[in-house]
Each structure stands twice: as C-alpha cells, then as structure tokens.
Image 1 (cartoon, rainbow, N blue to C red):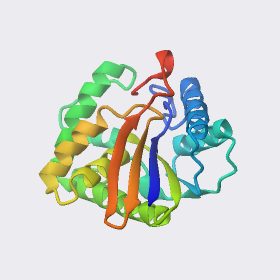
Image 2 (image 1 turned 30 degrees about the vertical axis):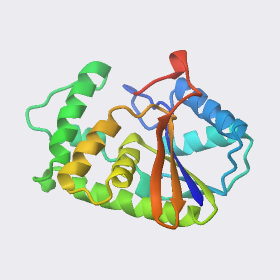
Image 3 (image 1 turned 90 degrees about the horizontal axis):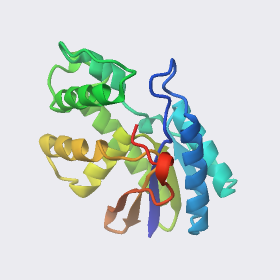
Length: 222
C-alpha cells in the first residue's frame, strides 16, 4: 500500500509586496513539520511541490528540519489558484489586502461565487479548470506512491481541499465538490498535512489537516 502526504505551505507574507514568500513564522512551521514527520519515521521516496515560491521554501525548510536528502520534483498542477484575481473578479466587492478579517470575509464570498460556476470568462482560471488540473495532479502523485511508495506533496490550501473533496466523494457532482471544497479550504492550517493511502481499490483519505507539530504563535491559518 502506498502513502501520499499532502502538505500545505507555511505561512506566506500577507499584506507584503510579495505574498508568495514565507514569513518568519512560515519558515519555522516548515522546519517544525520536517522534524515532526522524520521523528515519526516518515521517509519519502520523492517530494513533489507546486511551482510557487512558498512551495519551494516550505519544501526546503521541511527537508532541512527532517534531515532528508530526498529528490524534489516540481508539478505545477499543485499550484494555488489566483486568489487575488478571484476576489477582484467579484462585482462590487471592495476589500483591503492588509486587514486579515476583512480580506477573509471577501475571500469567502468571492470563492463561493467562483466555485458555483458560470461567468468563467471573468476569472483568470475557471473553477472547472482548477478542479480538473488538481485532480490530474492527484492522479499523478497517487501513481508515484503506489504500490508501496511514499510521496510527500507540498501545495496550498485550495488544491489540498480539492483533493480532499475528490477523495471523500469521488462521484460527487459539481455542487457537491464545491460545497466540500468550501468546508475544507477554510480550515486548512499552515504547514498541516493530510494522509492518503493508495491501495488496490484506489486512493482514500486517511487523515485531514494534522498539525500536532504546531502550538501557540506557530498555529496559523493565513
């Protein structure tokens, strides 16, 4: 049986000129995660990551914390959707990228509209396209994990929530997938990990959003 571990990146730099950079806390979260996974005997055959800076920096910190010399491969299928583009496409929705609470409220409204489908031309990436590329990336990662392999994927909250929704209800219609995604996406902790087992009957979600390596100020959602 194969094992797939889906890791959300460490905290990015909310409100900074470049969001796609880990904060000081994010770097510490990545190191703590690697230390935790290695301490529990995890030894991946390969580490996959999305093609974003926060994915790369999280993978580097995780490997350093774990003491792994594992090969790292890039799969852009695990990239996050353009969250600023989705928010900007929502009509009459004004928000600040410096106020976390206000931005979170706007983000949830905008992503609910996006994931409901329709008006695809308004978005940098349609919801259906996002779900399709993440499902494809999940399939590739599961193929590398099984049988008997261990793969760690470093990605973002959005793709991990799509993967979780697809694993929980692989036959769900678009509305079901969007509803599950919305529930998963709003609670994914920075540097948390979810475990998937890959067996003869396919892939199944074993755990979601584990974060026992975090406490106090290192426990963040944004």
